[in-house]
Image (tube, rainbow, N blue to C red):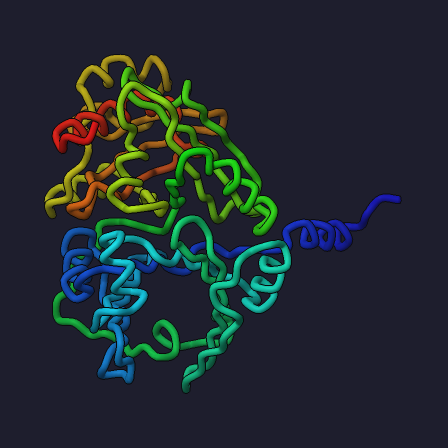
Length: 376
């Protein structure tokens, strides 16, 4: 018997028991949220959106919400010591705490994932105000990172209950950042496969790409990585672990300075990487330096591209191709004094991959920075 289109749709829905609509927001625990918000507005072109703190009835912390196109960051700081947020910052420095995912039904998302072995962080909780309601639930993932499930279909407010609009006279122009393309987690020795299994079993993700220490290695160091994707491809979480090498890999350096597993970088999409990176550099964002020799042969490897190679080489933008197209990508230096969190800026021209052909050039650039810090 051949399934009708409606039955086929039902089957597809049953297979993806955790249908995700994309990233809702990324929340950072930081030492000074007011200053961090100013930095992200100035350097990256975010706009003020919402605020919660003592003035809104929140006595133990403050949170600033900033937005650019479909990209939303929340920056949260504790007001006192001796609490989970303060302890997190003391241990890890500024870093990502919540990777929040947009769902149709946060209660069902929590039930589906906890039934499959996910450790609950927050049972389904309904927040209400005059603009409607938001339902939030959550589960733990690697390190102290948490996935929140955000259901906001019945909410019309600025961000969520408990927040007020944050009006500011200072609103720099945006830099063309669009949305979260993917978020990469660094985990400890021999922990990649257990976390791959977590995403498969608990969240219904699939391993769509794998890189071993032959793919990602230099003369001195190596790592392994697997890319996990949800059913519709809206959410992708590559997971890295260290591999044996002559010297310390970038993942080991991260684990040392972050004091554990966590989010290594957030990759942010742009529609015009040349314009975006040019503007970010003007605003003081520093990027990894790629050797000029990379550009001498890159077009032999990737073939014809729409862009002129000269501005790409001047900015240090990397190019790679897969069966479906090509991509342009570049990586910032760490955004904190600890060599932990950084950002990737990426423009996809059809490609669905992650720049495998650039790994060697990128890792050699990272090793130069590690060597300057004395951590290689």
